[in-house]
Length: 255
Image (cartoon, rainbow, N blue to C red; front, side, top):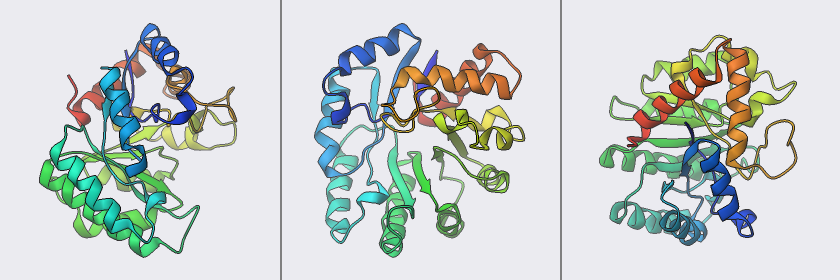
């Protein structure tokens, strides 16, 4: 059994064949899909997908790329849903400096506020980190404590950064399609990280693994990521599935 710990299957890219994609997941042993929110515009489709498919579990949060001038209004709406709903995590949240560096200050504010919600509600956080590991560490170093836990989604950092994440004590790293990229370098980093720190994800419809790079990603491609990890760790596919699934179940408190 595999768990896709990060998929946006509720987005319009799946409107024509969502049912077929989910059926393929079930027949391929991928029986849980964890869905991070983006902003208020995606809440309705997130909820309707989770209501229709029991394998889909929702998160609630404000994506850093959606942190604009009106971010406080967005956060207020997100918080209302979060505190009155049933969600497995707060996400995805974090800092993204790839698209827009000018919003760093307000991205940090939104990130910190959502971390505080996580502490109040005892929920894990799902961190989006793009060109921003050091900025995220700066925030976490300031407000991290033993009650905070979560995952660095789509980990692509260095070994030093991985060790920093591990040192926080309660964080995992989500491994996606990048690990299959020929010159990505992530495979070499992972050779020095124990499997107990990892979970599997696709980030579909984005970041397709080889040989589907450039095409729409979907959760069935999770098997390709697991197969690559089996090569890196010189173990069986079944071992990868068992350990990463156990990690996901523990972090997100899944049945």
